[in-house]
Image (cartoon, rainbow, N blue to C red):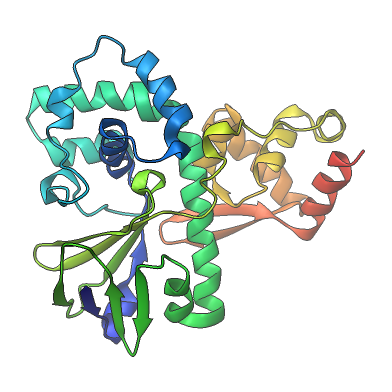
Length: 294
């Protein structure tokens, strides 16, 4: 059992982050030793994409489930959504061989699915942000995992082979939803004491079998295909970057469509940390629902 004492200052600095590097490293573990049928469609696709590629050097970096992933492979994510290239540079530095292998693996195995993976992780963050507003951190942790419990300022994480007591002393906690985390919560305490929990987000079950949402012809006729695509993709709140990835439009085009939709009262915008997010208003939901049912 790992116990983490969370004082008022720790809770005030607790944050969420999404890490493409963490997803890549965790996916290697899922590929190296298949344990879940959930990832079978992804594994079959990756097997075709990496046929003839020597993955052993990368597999050797990632230990079995019984041992934790080395800290240097999974640095604490900076910001809520760094890109893979930035994280890779921070982790690998001047190691050209490691950088090249991980970049090629990312491009083949994770990048094709990254827009969908990112949306799943973002949806979980918004869900838990709402829970924080409604019920505080006790609500946030209540359904994070059966391994996790929170009581009287102490966060407890059950591990099979690891135990310890951690006092963060104001350094805060970082919560990282990770599609490739599997069914277990993974905890890391990075020097000088920042704690990170990587956990399975909600909504991963249909990830590998779901395609992008396409706007209906009725909605496209009403708004134009570009704005219809953006409004359809906003079934879940998203950033401009996330919408560009989901729709295949350029960030500039998405920004212009959002400007029009916002002026018309169809979408709202709000800030979470350094990032501006968008969601449908009641009017936007009504238009999208009406067009979908036509």
